[in-house]
Image (cartoon, rainbow, N blue to C red; front, side, top):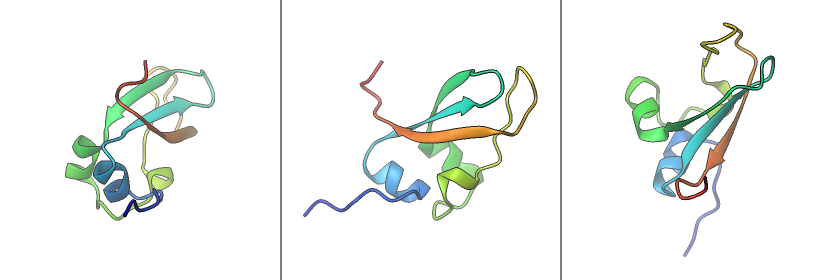
Length: 72
């Protein structure tokens, strides 16, 4: 049975998805492997509460969403 995807890192990893992080100030986007993020943060944490910061404008305002690895 297929389980629904919630917003935890563990669920994102279980479904084989990556994370797309978009800066709300400068619109810079980056795709990050969720397994690499789970090495530093608790896999049960919400993807919307991860402390990402933009390398371009140094802001912490971002939008995180699940991203299938085959979409480009």
